[in-house]
Length: 227
Length: 113
Image: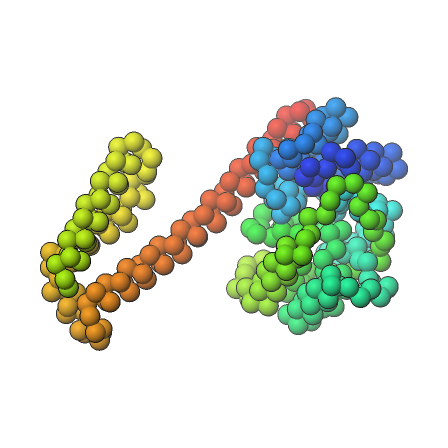
């Protein structure tokens, strides 16, 4: 199964080398592509120097845009599966095989889930996580334990949709929309790492904004969207 | 409608006209997009010259004063304009993203040949 690892990277100069070297050395069976999303630091220079396979946006498009570029690349190069992988080293490539096995079983999307088998810890962030989970359950009838996980793998059918669709960013609302349009989704238990460098973009007000947007999108706008 | 409001409408109408034509001259503005503003300026002119149209219309709908009717109509008109502007910006964003993505992928393909 021809598999592509898509690594969106925005100002990840501190992390990108470690992430890509790990993939190149320990997981040579997968292809990878770094999507440098108009970084202001020397992410692109590092990729060029190390001769990585990378695509560079001339200006910043945001995560959704970078993710879609990866999907377009996967579609053009005829990949059977594509996985979204964080540029900051939060995701562990050791779980990719388990996730791929699920794709082979016939699932369209497999989520690398922190809570497929383990219980959620109690925190503000998890309350948000639960709210989104409830909204997805309500609108699709499907229980996804970790809707906000950024580690998701997609089969060929989904690659085509995500590459050609409009406004299908790698977020829970897209997941809900795809499920309602017939995508089969499964979860695989994974462990994620804490960030070792750089800072998370999630501040309190940003989280609140994100939550509001997700709830409106999933509960209301979803019914009018094409997918 | 007071004489003051009528004069104001005429002045605004002329100012809008001057702005639009100057922008067109400097090619800061595409002809297509200027139509809305020209129409608006003509509308102001008509209202100020023939305020009777407004009296009739506001009476018909039931406004107490024609100026209220004018304010509300212009308010709605601008809201509608703003809405379509939003739609246009969205479309431009999608087009821009597509363009950047295609450019980026192509330059990657060239390098790997």
